[in-house]
Length: 173
Image (cartoon, rainbow, N blue to C red; front, side, top):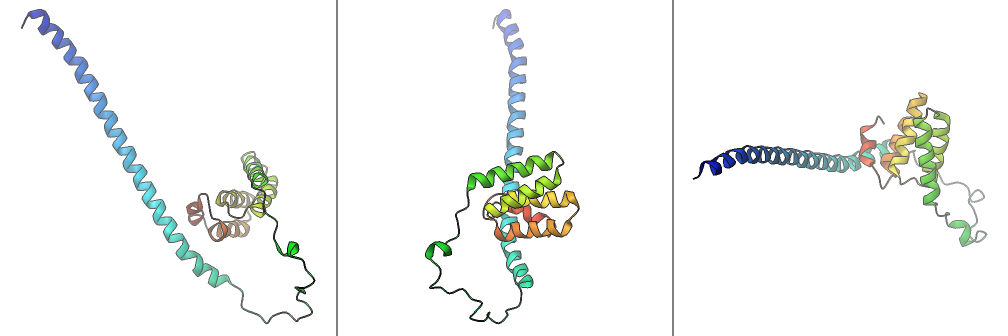
């Protein structure tokens, strides 16, 4: 091997070692990131599967005792009401999303009363949104009304169908 080739090879070996070391470090970081994400997904799945087991027990414990049916005079006459009266109005998802956003912004700005008002409107319009229940519960916590905060977190577990429902299980209820 010629001396010039040997020198060039020695210089390039430094760069090759540096690049191989950097690539190895990136691979290790990527493996750690995948392991953490997988662990997080598995623990979230475990929390979600555990949450439904808790809900029926709480619902049974807090369910009011059965009472006698109301007298016939107090019950509505089915013939007098039209089918349009019996169908609940469809919630407007855009309006619910606007109310949830307004609630979050008000809470971030420290306007707790506005956050509660918008949060109540949001969960009324769309009770299936876990995030709306969480924001409402956080607003009540910020106000210091822990009973209402617990009610919101409990409702999040029982009524929500989408969103970060597993976070509701982590909150005091």
